[in-house]
Amino acid sequence: MQVETYPSVHQLVSTVEGQLRHGTSALQCVRAAFPMGSMTGAPKKRSMHLIDDLEVGARGIYSGTIGYFSCNGAADLSVVIRTAVLTPESITVGAGGAITILSDPSEEWEEVLLKAKNVVSVA
Image (cartoon, rainbow, N blue to C red; front, side, top):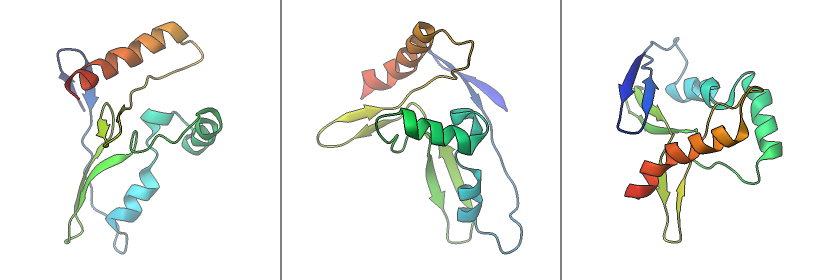
């Protein structure tokens, strides 16, 4: 784990490597690992049900993964945060915060705007 520093944010970055159990595919591993806890909180499945009930639309790729699965079974993937999705009709940027019972809604909103600001400025 390391902290990468950028002009507008400090990002905690983790690299996870491992060997799959015989008979387990990289795709099965990814399916079992998502959604990742840092995006939804814990317990993950319950959080996802709550998010589905509360949010007005699907998140699309936000908090999912981008990467590749190679023919030899290897994979290199990254969690999708602060990413612009461009279509002919629009640009969508996903950004969020770690909301807890102690969170201040206005401070959380400011954090979301700060996280999205630089992605929006270059999109």
